[in-house]
Length: 317
Ligand SMILES: Cc1ncc(C[n+]2csc(CCOP(=O)(O)OP(=O)(O)O)c2C)c(N)n1
Image (cartoon, rainbow, N blue to C red; front, side):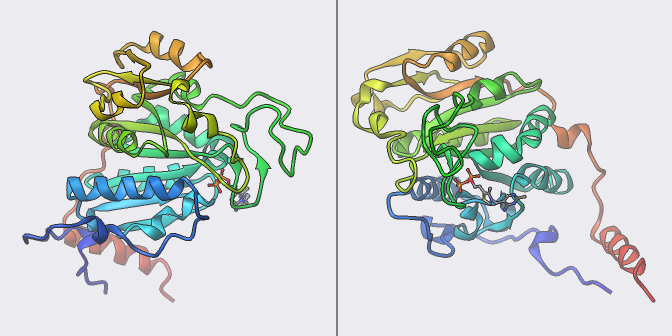
């Protein structure tokens, strides 16, 4: 007989707890020094503390890769899954437990290569969760193979003479999928911008796809060097329905007022390659979310125990 005693199974905790940033810190991050993943982790922990998300109602799901070590470093529930499979895992969690706050962390290999089918279909399903794609343009954990976002000519162990093709454009790709409902881009070296995008993504109702340009000091140290050194290479997309961070106006002089409801202009901006554009490209809060389309009627604790016992009886000798 199974007893339900744990908060994961829905008992409301009525107390006056509050959380500081440190409360969301789990194991010490083992990423290389200078890796952009550290900055993303700090922004996420700051966001969790500001929004006071209860750790037991928050789940971080990942695939396999350096960036996918994320759930180990956040003090919440977590699922370090299989390479490329973070999105279907997270969708399953959201379908069964729609009240949980679900975050997905993937690398560019994870999302755009082995997990590409899941990326497309999760965008189309539109579950209400946030996906962060940490894009360092390389397979980091396995030590330097070309990824779908590696720019043409960048050398790796698998393409030592340089990547044969232009890197794919994850923003334009996501925008092209039916039911795309939130598509944004930010960079690990602009913490206030990551924070603002994260907050907008979380507040959006639907699948929020956030590409985070992420530095890998080990294998692609040149990739965002210019972007960091020369503020003129960046253009901010600003709008009240997207993000607008006043402090960044001191640093970045190029900005464009872009209404994220305008899909055609979002495409146009996503395809320009004269500058790196940071901000919310597209947002539509009116699309149906998958956990409602596929709603499973809520069950009482007793009904859940009966279901679990029936499952376990399958294996009774
Ligand atoms: C099915 C499967 N194929 C391949 C691998 C080997 N593998 C582990 S991580 C990885 C790539 C990681 O690159 P990325 O997703 O870009 O994340 P990063 O390490 O750069 O953060 C690969 C190919 C695996 N673990 N499982």
